[in-house]
Length: 215
Image 1 (cartoon, rainbow, N blue to C red):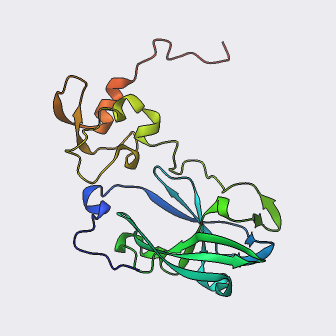
Image 2: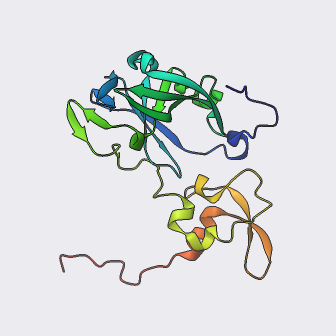
């Protein structure tokens, strides 16, 4: 794993209000690959992050590390840090780079130490309290791919300045963000403005504000 370098962009410096939740799953989670249970934990967590689908993480102590083979793959997230990867070998099945960890995460997410993340779709099956589940669990109100600026207001995201917003992208901000960023319209005009101000200007007011289904 590569150590964090001075040249690595720290997302928290550029976007200190970025949102990541790391919630406990109130169930015993079991992960299967190649017909073999490779992890079982009552301490599993789910990560909710702007622009990302929910991701399940398991304490390393609850993962059968004998089924994992370390690889030389290394990726860098400006909010979490460098990730190291493992290939899963179980039941005669090989799944490349399916599990990762942040051995030295950024201090803002030190809670990630000791947890392994799993690509949901690369696993054979998932269980919560011995009931097979088809996808990661959503929690209402948590951030994900659906409530980021880019998804909710694609016309505004299209005016995100291509060069002046160094190190930050529109999927990293919610529509209610107070951040001041650079914009550029189709005429080439450039200006700075708060994200939430642009969102308010792009929405409308209803004239029937008292309308309700009860008459």
